[in-house]
Length: 63
Image (cartoon, rainbow, N blue to C red; front, side):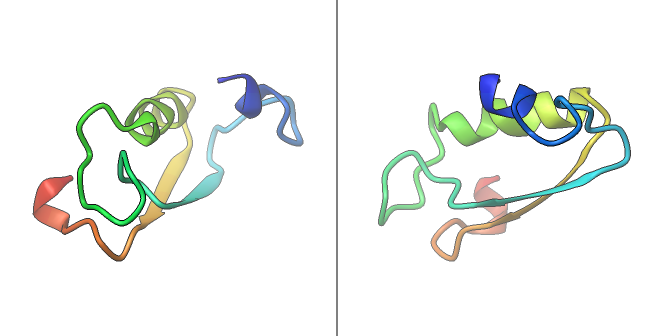
């Protein structure tokens, strides 16, 4: 979560929207098992941020 701390505002995410591109564990797959993106999403939500995600290979029912 070090990258969140380095964001403008010192990682303060309350009410901010954050976009994530690429969610899968491995490029070119729809595999979300142990994907680092899931931990990042949880942390953003815990800090009061809103998350928008996009990965053309991941189907909504897998998330």
